Length: 623
Ligand SMILES: C[S@@+](CC[C@H](N)C(=O)[O-])C[C@H]1O[C@@H](n2cnc3c(N)ncnc32)[C@H](O)[C@@H]1O
Image 1 (cartoon, rainbow, N blue to C red):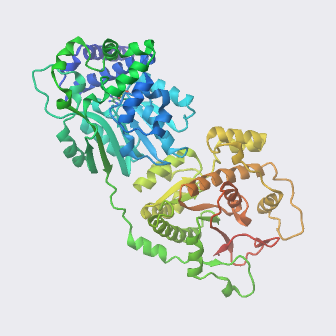
Image 2: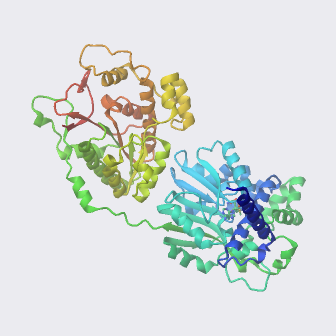
């Protein structure tokens, strides 16, 4: 950019900033389409909450705040997590009751403040979930991000600066969007609700605690900006319907504005029990001063006339819930039918002279598959005949999982864990695909994975509606090469840092028997011969084990969450039960049914037997 042009940009920005500062924020008509006015309001709140953040250390008392939070229905367990953070809570209600957050979910907290609700949500989603807090105040984001680190939650909870009217996250990303006191302050509610709708996955839900105006505010009164931006109670439902939300509910059960009233008896009792220094925080003057300092509330001289009004008549705290309509899962009957016409050629692992006798009947293999919690499918990559068979098996597993779910046995879902996807960012692409059915350009062009070949299988996973796809191995990460170059101990630490293993106990060393099989697979030595394995592959063997451990961890976690699992990998990771199956068994304390399928050519018999041990329960015969 030319210097002169730069100067004119800077001048324009300065002039705009000055004009924004000169606006009397409380007189802006928030209901108009006045973009400049809206920007001024958002700037005002960002500044105001930066100010709140700077004064956070002088906030009230956690015990008092806890009494009030319990009135909102926060449970003992939630209060335990919140602990002394209670005095950092600035919300208007309790979003958790309606949000009903589950393990493994992705949750967005809009206007996340100091992160109080985000940390409660983190406990509910556990290690397999994610919470993203969005707030317009840079200082609050910085403080809450640090608090996430202090709580050891930085892998689960992150905070980002952003505007609810323009959420910095991609479409169909979250299972649940919640907000506690942040949504009320947004000037353009239609834009904000549309943004929530956009970032929710189909079927996803919102739980928004906010303050509203019960009535049209009388004109010719000087109202503070926060009341000017509240939406009107009776306008919410039509607005949400128009955007496409279903299952809409506006809960008024905790709607009184004086819920946080310090005059309440139990609060007064607690105040009287405080030591004198703490008690000073609860004189009316100290309370009003805090409000005024934050410049968020209406405690200033200018708004003294508000004392004439009964705020319970004018405003209401509500919890707004709604769901992004899950367009009925479009199962394509003709696709199902064509998938069902795939009859995998599955035979017993041991060949004898009478081949006919060794094939499983459809009834037999269906029984084995549906009885299993996990099907380990050791394949030869990119063979379309194998992929057709995998589609049939996936269809059957999916149907049976739905049935299991209805019976209350398991989640009703299937996790399709695939080696073909190999890095954490690919997991984001997979989640996007499985909720929209549309592969991103990036997904179509992922290294190590041929979209064109696996497209049919992935599309089926989407169509079935209860299947999620998980990326398997960390093969593009540094840990794998560290294992080869510097030994497995260092590699395992790296894998923990990269997030693909949780603890060093997740790494279970390989046995000599396993090395024997691994070496023969690479060198071509016949396993049934009396030749000993060479030592040539000892350096890379631990990297193979690392991959096995990572995918085993993913599979184990999915079993624990009640999913049925289909695990697709190269056959070297599952043959003879070495690698993934043996580790999943070790990770999983309770016994569960599983079956293994491997692939072999019609006359291939050198992989059938290892000291009497079968390569797999079933062999998919390929030509
Ligand atoms: C009343 S506080 C509630 C904070 C937190 N949810 C809690 O319950 O403690 C409102 C929060 O919303 C944020 N906020 C206001 N307008 C916003 C906007 N347009 N986009 C994102 N955050 C916003 C403020 O910075 C502030 O942190």
